Image 1 (tube, rainbow, N blue to C red):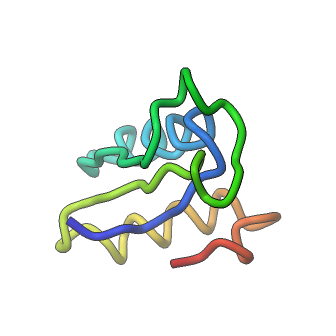
Image 2 (spheres, rainbow, N blue to C red):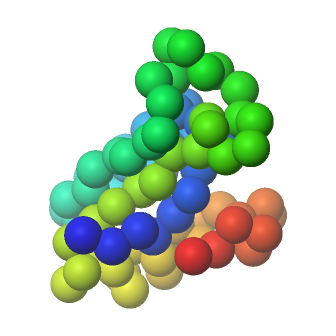
Length: 77
């Protein structure tokens, strides 16, 4: 599995996951803390990594960054 996006919280990560799902790209979310405990980002504690199988990484990144170009440049992997 390869990280293709680092979201600032569970909601953003779920949106990205839904985008990938709609294109048939399998994905999973990985975070350091439970979102119900940390609903904010402090020192990367609320970050959620969007992971995809290696073979889908380039396609996933292209989709994510073409859909989300306004603020994703700062968080590209």
